[in-house]
Image 1: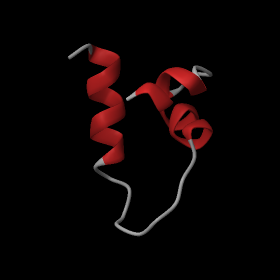
Image 2: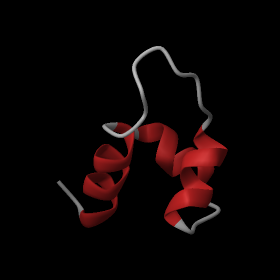
Image 3: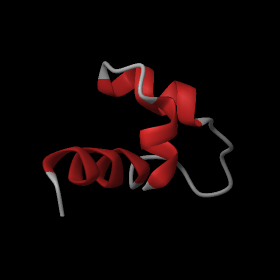
Length: 41
């Protein structure tokens, strides 16, 4: 697993169950504009 994929996965684990978020919000938290790359994982 790449470092980026691990960061995305770790962040997803912090999203509360039943909560809806977007790739854009996740990418912004990670400090990137690679929204599609976040969606890949």
